[in-house]
Image 1: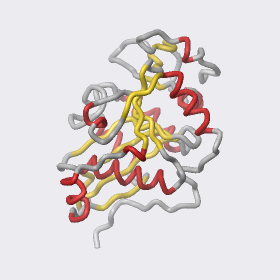
Image 2 (image 1 turned 180 degrees about the vertical axis):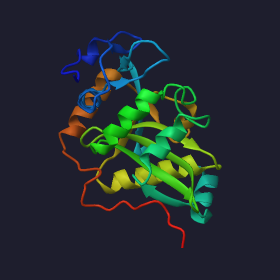
Image 3 (image 1 turned 45 degrees about the vertical axis):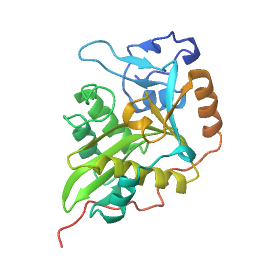
Image 4 (image 1 turned 120 degrees about the vertical axis):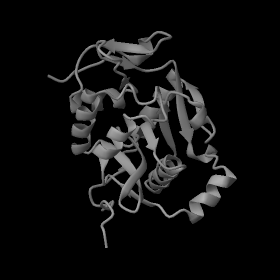
Length: 230
């Protein structure tokens, strides 16, 4: 059975732990993200749900794109898609080239299974970077109903994940969103302009954003398929 309620995340201590145990049912995940909470399994320990005291966010108005990356973006011969291979992206993020948290070690098999089910429900989404027919980078995250939380990204060719991130931001901006949750500050995202935000302020921002009712990934949009051999 899915979790039907979480404690108020404002009650979490400095470690950010809101709850321990429960399940990864899509309803539980959606409820968690809509309340600023996310799961972070660690090996065989019980499932832990977090809402960090300091949250990392990226305001798109503060986005910094290094000059070199801008040049690469104009000339690189990669193809980008949305939701063309969600499972491929999350499985790749679980490998050795993850760029968030602890090199993907937290993306355990049960997380892959749960988030693929979450994707089929229309709540988890991916951006893929392709070199020909080969998946060479990507990022995935969660749409909580008009607010987006980035989970993890990977690359097997230089800059592929960074360019997938920029493709995602372009899409979210086109749907009216002006910021993205990155959960935990990392040097990688700080270089793009991400900043820390106290939990209370983040929860207010999340609530305000969800109240706008943005459709970030409407079913009416065709996002594309895996590149085909021509």
